Image (cartoon, rainbow, N blue to C red; front, top):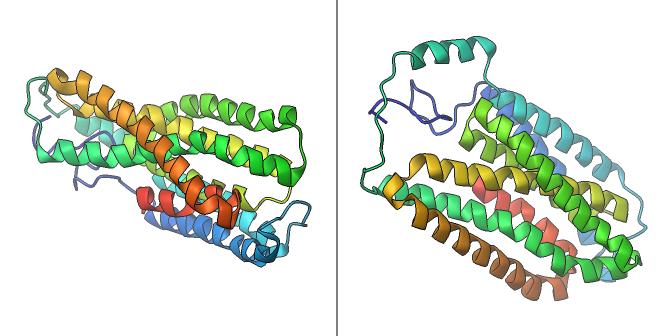
Length: 283
């Protein structure tokens, strides 16, 4: 792509990585969503004397307020990234004057390696979430006193969310750009961190569905962004290597966190990790 032409998700005028069409909406939504997650933490900490056993506890007022802030915040952040109708028409008008050339034979630059590194972190976080299911199910089944058949619904909800999220985020990425769509998936990861404080198993099913949607949305966009950015003669082995390392890395991170955190903070800590990990990808 010729100099001066931005990526699909950047601004042709400023070269920014992500264009916030309504910055106040986005930052207000992101802050509200994060605050909603933080409102759940006092109840989690209060249960430390019972080894963080929260099954059967009522949803307190701060938790309900937090749930509302998460939903409202995600909607505001989405609106903040959606292009205005007039802006979309102007972008198409500008695109008519752009000139493109193939990058199939281009050399790999530091910008390529930087992009691959950032996308690798996103891929590890993305793979870590489904890998964590195997480590939370035993503790979750014991705390909620559910059978193996009932616990299997968690996996079903996660896979259903992954499938639907792949479709929804694919459409969204074409509308607001690849990087902006990854940012929204990261925000959803932040919101679903409250899965670690849910007092009822049914709430976990809902949050796991949304977590699967975020994971399903991020994964194909990561590969699409790599395929669109990496020169063709290096694309095959780099994407395969990237995918393999992301899968192994995500599984190892999930296993390591389970070994270090679960004995001290229960299985719930593995879901609460969504907050710092997704914040590192989005903010």
